[in-house]
Length: 279
Image 1 (tube, rainbow, N blue to C red):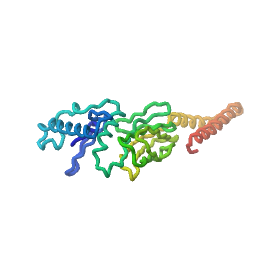
Image 2: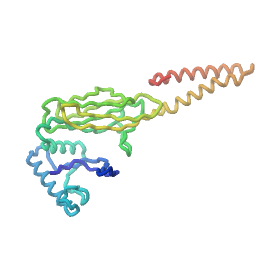
Image 3: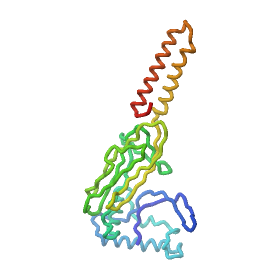
Image 4: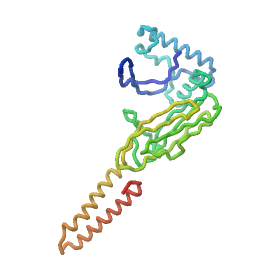
């Protein structure tokens, strides 16, 4: 039996000894047609019908009776995505729940719906799947969960951030309801250099469930990248000019430059400390 889950694009292949490795990028969900009120028997029939049609679609292109679906026509006509990721995810959970053995039913299903700034601007990953963060900006990671059947006991999801990123809210999410969307607040402190890391969202034992690893990059804020060097150069120049202008006629000008240089140094120290940067 085959249960369709998601569409993907092959981005790279690799052969290591006798092992053939395929890297692919996941995209939209591909659920079968379903309604929430359908019975388990109706979903089993839909899976059986899909599996038969898939084998028939691939049989001419596969010498091993379609055991390995490597070539052949597209099975997109056999699925019924709505392009509403939330609805399609719920449909997949309804198909997956009865398909696992009874002793593995204590599992949770969750997905990351979005990462956005405080102004609700969504952050999109780059072509390598890494999410770009800007130091000094607060973000919200939205985690949605859905369960076809009521939980017999609370499930827990842990959020582990790299050193350059702080989890402002609780690092452990306790799930008691069948469905919800839980915001997790993240804050990368101000910094002067780029950083990379991995945000890990993991289902805590004894509950079974997925582990999501999100690679991320953190760049300094523009204020740090521009203001700090400019202020430093200006302060150094103002302090260096009085000796250059050493003469009786330039006394007032020398005093002005010395005061400006000292003020710039003090302002720079205050500005760095206010953002948690070292002196």
